[in-house]
Length: 304
Image (cartoon, one colour):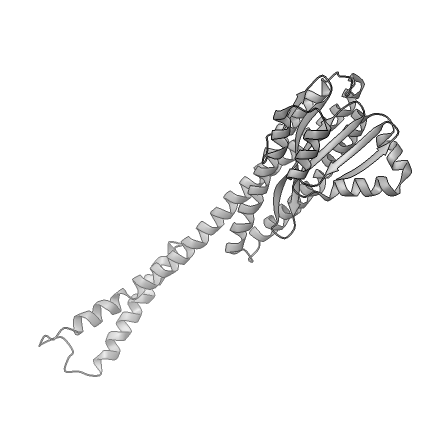
C-alpha cells in the first residue's frame, strides 16, 4: 500500500486487490460488504454507488500492451470520503504510479491536486487517467494509416488481414471502455454530497466532454476500418480472380494438346498420320495455331 497525506486529504493506493488489501479495507473502514465484494472479485462493470458518507466507483481505462499490440482494460476501484481517497488497481497502469512519484518529489504538484478536497483530488486522478487515453487513440490512428498505405501498395499480404482484425478488435474494446465511462461521468456531474460538492460538477463535465471526443474519434475510426476492411477484401478477391483467370486460360490453351495425346494414346489401328513420322511437326504446328487463336480471342474479350 502507498499512502500520501497532504493537509486534510489522505490517499491510499493499492496495486493489487489481494486478500491483504481486502482485509485492510474491511477492518479499517466501514464500507458496505457488497463494495468489499466487488473489490475482491474479478472485473466489474463501471458504476457509481453513492452512500451517505462515501462514494464507491468502478472505472475503466484503456491500457495498451506494446508487445501484444492490444488494448487491455485497466479497472480502478475508488472510495471517496470527506478526507480520503482510496484506489485499488486491477491491472497495470503506470500513470497512477507516475502521479504518486511526482507528488512525492514535487510539493507544488501535491498542493495543486490534493490541496483543496478529497473530491477534487478524485477528479484530478480521473482527469489524468482520461488524458492518458489520447496516446492510445493516436497509436491506433497510426496503425490505421500504416494499414491504409499497405493496402494500396503491392506489399499487402496475409499479415495485412491479421493487422486489420487486430485493429478492429482494439477499436471494439475501446468503445466498450468509453461508453460505460460516459454514463458514470454523467452521474458524477450531477452529484451533490458532502464528499463530492456540487461545485465540482463543472470539472467532471469537462472530463465528460473529453470522453465524448474520444468516443467520436473512435466511432470515426471504426467506420474507416470497416471501409479499409471492405477495400482489402475487394483487392484480395480481385487478385484471386486474376489467378483463377490465368489458370483457366492455361487449362483451355492446353486442352487441344490433351485431346490429341489422349486420341493418339489409344491402341487403335488406322489412326491418321501414324505411318508418317514427320507429320507430328505439322500436328504441333496446328495445335500451336489453335492456342494462338484462343489467346487472341481471350485478349479481344479482355479476359487476359
